[in-house]
Every structure is written in C-alpha cells, then in structure tokens.
Image (tube, rainbow, N blue to C red; front, side):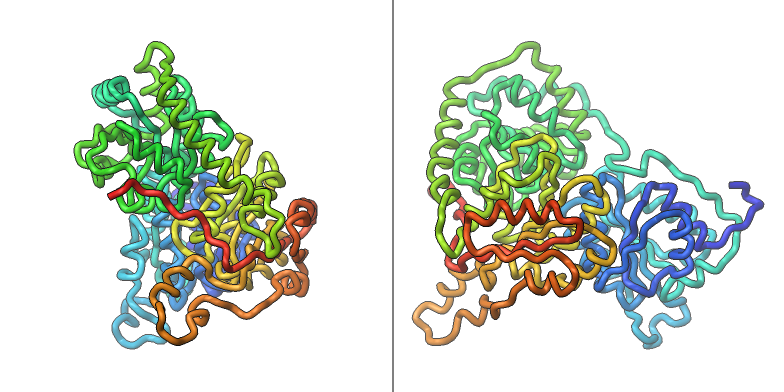
Length: 561
C-alpha cells in the first residue's frame, strides 16, 4: 500500500489479520465493531462466544490445530476474563493474540466505569504485552504481536487498544502500510540449528548408554518433529515415552512405544524411564507432571535435553547435555551423527515385557461389560471409532488420564490435543480446532465437571455450524479428588459428597433443546455406534456416556524411596 493513501484503523487491523492468514476470530462483544464489518467483507469469520474465557480457549484450540496464531478479543470490562483464559495457552505454549480495549489515559486511576489496570492481569500469561495508544503504532505493534507469538517458544501476546472497545483507534485515518511478514504467519517462525559440538556431545552420551530412553514432549508437536523422533528411535532401537502433550509422537502400537510418563501415566512408562541410564528429553519443560514431581527419572540420571530455549537446559536436571535448537532440525541432525543402525536386544526385551504386562493387566477393563460403564471400555470404543484423520481434544484431570493411558492412537493422521491444566478447556478448544481444520473430524473428551464450565457454547457451535462431537464421561461428579476428600474426612461426621457430587442432568436432552444431536449411552455395546452416528451427523453432537463415580484412573508408579 502506498504511504500517501490513508486507511482507517479498522481497515488496517482487518487487512493485517487477513494477510497473516487468520480465518476466524473469537470474541465477546463489544470490541472493534468497525473492524468486524471490515473482517466480514474480507471473508474472515467472526465467532461470537458466550464468555471471554471461552473465546480465549477457542483461539487456543484453533492455534494448536492449525499451527497459526489464534486471535481472541474483548472490550475493557472483559479483559480480566480474557486474561484468565490465556493461562492454558501460556502453559501449553500456544500462540494466541489477545486484543482488548482500554479507556483513554484521562480515564485511568479515576474510578472509570468497568475499568481496572490491565497490565498485572496479562503479565503472567503472556510473553509480550503492549499498549496501542496512537494509530501510528498499529503497523509496528500488530506485526510485533505476530513475531512474538510465533518465535522461539510460542506463547500468547496481548495488545491493549485505546478506547474501551477500540473505537478511537478504529476511526482514525492515517497512511498505515499493511505489510505481511510471511515467516510469522505460522509457527515455528524460524528453525534455529544446533551447534555441531552439541550434537557430537549428545551422540557420545547416547553411544555410551546401555538403557537410553527418548522422552518426547509438547515441543515435538510444536516443531512437527514426530517423524524425525521416530526415525531416530528406529535407527538406534531406543524406546520412546511421551508426555501427555507429546502423545501421538509415536503410534501406540509401535514396538518402541512405551506410553505416557509422569503423574498422568501408564505404569510401564514410569518403570522404563526409571530404569534408564540416559533420558533424552526432546521439547520438554521437565516439570513436575512429566517427571512425577522429579521422581521419574530419579535425581542423578544422565540427561540429554533438546530445546529451542537455552534457559530450559538443565532447569530440573543439573548437568544435562544441552542441544539448543528447533526440535525437528536438532533431531534430524542427530540422526546423521550415527553411521549405522544400532540394536540393543536386552534393553528392548526388558521394555517390551513391561509394556506387555501393563497391557495384559488393563485389557480386561477395556473389554468390560460393566454397568455403569467403565471409562476404560469407553476409551477402547473411542480408539476404534476415532477416524484415521481425527483430532481428539481432551480436558485435564481424569479426562487427560483416561485418554492418555487408554485411548490408542494407531494411525499417523490422528492428532491429540490436551488441556495444559484448565478444567473446562476442551469443549471450546475443540470448537476452535474444528474452525482451523474443518475437513477433519474433531472429538472432544470431557467429564461432566468439565462440560459444565462452557455448556452454553453448544449454542455457539450450532449457530456457526461447528460440527464437533463431544463425548461426556458423565459420572455425576468430580471423581479425581474423591479419595483425598474421604481421606481428609477420615472418621469425622459430615457430608463429603457435597465436595464432589452433582445433581443428575441429561446433557443429551440439553443438546437436543439447543438444536444439536444428543445421544445418551447406558450400555457398553452402544458406545461405538453412538460415536459413529455422531460423526455422521451434519450438526454438533453430544454423546453422553453414563459411567460410575466409583471408578478410579490408574495411579502413577514411582520407584521405592
């Protein structure tokens, strides 16, 4: 655009978002209304939600499914709610761009209606936050938002726009150049290569190990490095464990796959990682969940750590051999450091025996005909019904444990997205994922506790024809905390069930009232057909599966002491 041609702020924002490949924006009225008009003209879909938090979750799901930044918006009074919704995107390393309105400086610190200071709200949940006070800042700060969101470790960014709904910036007419930097339309924006010396040091550590294990985490998904990780594992005969966020890196039926490790885990994965004499972390923050509070592997276990962020190297395991770079580039380079394929039969036999023992133990539960339905059986039926190109979006808590440990992803076209910790995230995130991948089947797996959070977004799904399938594991309460609640009560009199039980409600009937397909499943042999019927429906669908509140997910295993 020529600099002597003036453009409104509204048109500039709309053209910039469109130019960066944004196909949907998720918002709660009222924000950037003039921009909304321009976005419609440019073909960008505007998804009006029922809460700011849901808008943030939808943008997060969109970003994770598309590998492009997701955009969410709210006016000044909704900024606090929008910030709360960014926590999961921050923890999950998702590039969400949040736009909020802010009353002018003269209104600040004078008890302006609905106005509070925004900076402290967004500081812990963004990697970059800036105020846009003048129209002349728009070209610089909006481009910078895309740079920050997609570069290095992707995370949310925030722009606070002048005017409680951004109108003051929208109305201005100035010579604002619309410049699109293609590298930042997706993530990773750049792929830094590791140093040769670091690759050589890592290779020496791997050669010296007798019981190495690869631990693939969310950074593998961010980098699209799954194929390289599997190629490395196959060349060197190294078993592969994953974090919950890394599930899907290697197919569950692959002979080198040992399952999900940590606190939301299968026993065999924790056992194998604990027995390893070298753990190769790829794209992992080595936090408490993936290490079961740093018990798996035990302190002192040698570690190779591959990460794009040098600050992560050795954060939890001192003395780690560090390889700083993009995961896909680093693993590809590491593969070339080995001339020939290697085998390690004793270690492979040991790992495969542990995996087989675990699978033999849980298979009767996956085949169970019990009523109420066991979640293990639900996960088996979902494994078989999930299309080969399906996207499975799981909530946190028990939903994450059940799907991570009991749903088998055996097709390379399947994807797994999971909440980074926010209960209720999965349903709106699945709607965002479906907007990003309209040609792929998207299934949400949540419990009744998680579904209650954003049940109103069923209307959003119906209004916009966002045809996801939502499986509700309905056990009538919040099951994960029950053992601890009863332990705390001990022999004390009282009503511990008030801390976890809900009244009985039919989500299937609610879905039907909203205009969605609603199916209630009470017998195990009905699950598969219900899921397939929901996938074939040309409208949003809810499959309510009646399970038992008494069923417990697998407890994590840790080494003695």
